[in-house]
Length: 427
Ligand code: AMP
Ligand code: GLY
Image (cartoon, rainbow, N blue to C red; front, side):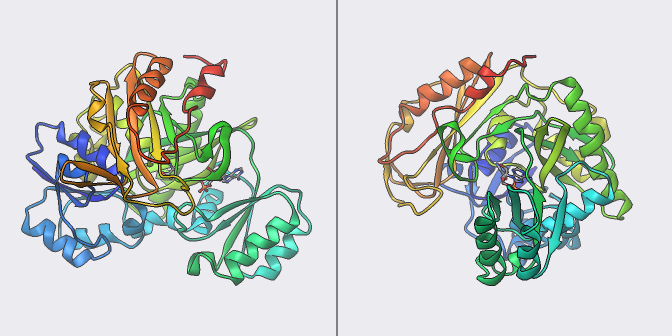
C-alpha cells in the first residue's frame, strides 16, 4: 500500500519511521515533511491547508491511507474533504476535532458527559471575565477558546496577571478569533500525564501513558514550550489509575461523541492532571502528541499500518490489546537557542553520524540538509530517543547520543525522566 503522512515535525518523522516497518507499506510520501523525513520517505512540497491539492495528490498517486499529524488541518476539515472523495484518511472529522479546536466545546462536552475536569466558566466579554476574576481565589487558568499553537493558556497568580491575559486575548486579540471567547478554570495541582488512545468510534485502545516536560528549563522552570522531552511508560499511572482513566475519561469521551451522533475516528489524547481526588482532564487533543509519539511508537510492536487501517475501517475491536516492548524510552528534544521565543535557523549541526547505536532513534523536528551538511530549521530541532530495559538506562542512552550532537546554542533539558526515578511508585 502507498501511504501519505501529513505534517513536518518530529511526530511525523516517528509516524513515517514506524509505518515503514510494516511489510504492507510499499511507498511512503510525506507532505511537506522535512530533511530528516526525506531520508526515509518521498517529501512533496504542497500546502497542508490546500485540501484540493492534497486530495488530488492522494487520488492521483493511489494512496491507500493518509495519516494526519497536526491539529490545524483536522480542525479545518481535511478528513471531511478526503471522505467526500472516498479517500481513506486517519483522523477525526471537523466536528470531532472540535474537542481540541474549541476549549469551550471541550469543557461543555466534559460537563455534559460527567468527565472529570477543572471547574470552569466561559466568557465572551473582557469586562465580565475581569469582573469574575475579582471574586476568585488565585491562581486561575485562563484559556483562549480556539487554537493558539500551544500558547493560549495562562496561569494567572493574581488579578494583575489575570487582567493582562484577558485583555491580551479579548481586547488586543493576540490570538485573533481564537480569543473571542475564553475559559477561566480552577488551577489543578499534581503530576501531568499524557494518555493517547486510538478509537474507531466504537471501541477504544489505549497506548502507553507517557510524561511530557512542557517547561523550557530543568526542574520545570521557564516558559511553556511544545514539549522538551518525554519518557514512556510512566509508572505514575498504576493499574488502578489506568482503569479510572479508561472508565471515567477515555470511554466516556468516545460514548459522548456517539451520543452526539459524531463518529470519532483517530487519536484521543487526554492531557491529565493526577490530582489528590483522581485524574482530571486538562485538555483533549485530537491527534498524536509531539513529542509523545516519538517516545511511544518505538515501544510499539504491533504493526502500525494494521492498527490505523483498523481505525479507519472501524475494525478496532480486533485489537483488544497491543504488543509492547517491555522496555522504556526517553526522548530528549534539542532546541534552538531562544526557543520558545525568537530563535535563529541555519545553524550548522555536527555529529549526527557519530551516533551509532541501534537502540537510539533520532527524529528530526526542524532540520535542513544541504549537500552533506545539516542545519537547524526550527525551534525544536531534533528528538533523540533512547530505548533500554530500564528508564535509567534509556535516559543514559539518550543523553550519550545527545552529547555527540552539536550546534551552537543547542538547548536541551538534562532532566527528562529524572523525576520518575525519584517517585516512589514503581511497577
Ligand atoms: P493545555 O494547552 O490546555 O494543555 O495547557 C498547557 C499547560 O497549562 C498544561 O500542560 C498545564 O501545565 C497547564 N494547565 C492547563 N490547565 C491547567 C489547570 N486547570 N490547572 C493547572 N495547570 C493547568
Ligand atoms: N506534547 C504536547 C502536545 O502534543 O500537545
